[in-house]
Image 1 (cartoon, helix red, strand yellow):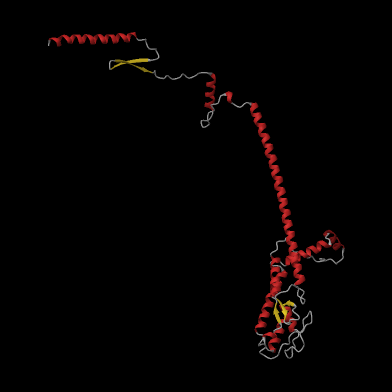
Image 2: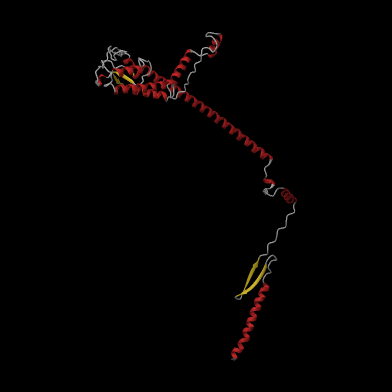
Length: 342
């Protein structure tokens, strides 16, 4: 117990001494600057220095005249307009504006030059298109004229002098000439004798005068005595060529024929003056006539309409005659002749 009582004051004095030394060391530290404040804490028998930054201060408003002027200008402008934060040194100078204006003028001139070039190209392209369409129409006109010339040269009926409609040839082998169905039927029934209703005279070909097979009066007749044979090849060629003429794309137009005079006598001064004003040569008149012929063979043309009508009538009459040929009597032949008007 005595030892314990002795050690107790020693520990107290040592502790006090150490604390005094620590506090004395603090006084020996250099003083912190005025802008910083130091807080000291003792943790685990050590001095910790905590540096605290001063609170930020507001920057005083600059009272320069340029800033005051800018604020006064901003206050006069509307609120929805954005404020221009650029300085005067960064604004566009008049010389820069002139330079930019000159550059824009140069670009405008270049664009105008390119637009003129494009216009010239479009004009040239349109001219070439017109030339190509004119050339195509000329080619189509030439093809149509060639087709019509072939039809008129090789497939013209020797009785009506028109394009064959429903072509039929005569029966005997030594003849074989081809005509329109209606034309050859009328020619055949024109030789029918009205009083007896028979063929007492010989019937021959209108071109080569070859005699046909005599039609027997007795019924029933044989099929081989039928005097006509259909020409399928000629019919197919005629149909294809006429269809080609109807679908031709040539730009020919119908020629309107004008009367020689309307209230004036032929050969008068008015007619001579009108003829001089017209001023058309013979070649131009022939070309107009050819174009009129081509136009009449188109869809809805007069010649095409007449040909289709004649073709249908010929086919109908030939089909009826072939169907009842073996049983037809004299009175039936007379009725058919009266119907045909021969």
